[in-house]
Length: 60
Image (spheres, helix red, strand yellow):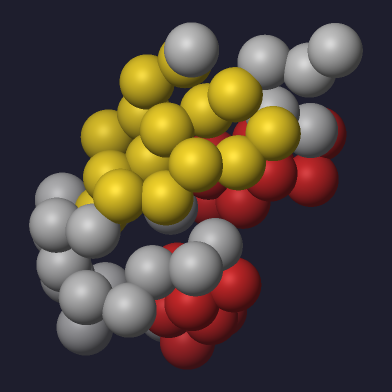
């Protein structure tokens, strides 16, 4: 069973590379300060690593 990861968007992706903005959308964020929960898979971990300067991460 995989761990859950809770990700909070703390900073707006405006002004960052297009690929980083796309990653924010792919994780399921629509607005700033939103929270999403995912299974901690290698793909999700890579996405979080790419936008680590925009998000806060908690493991459950």
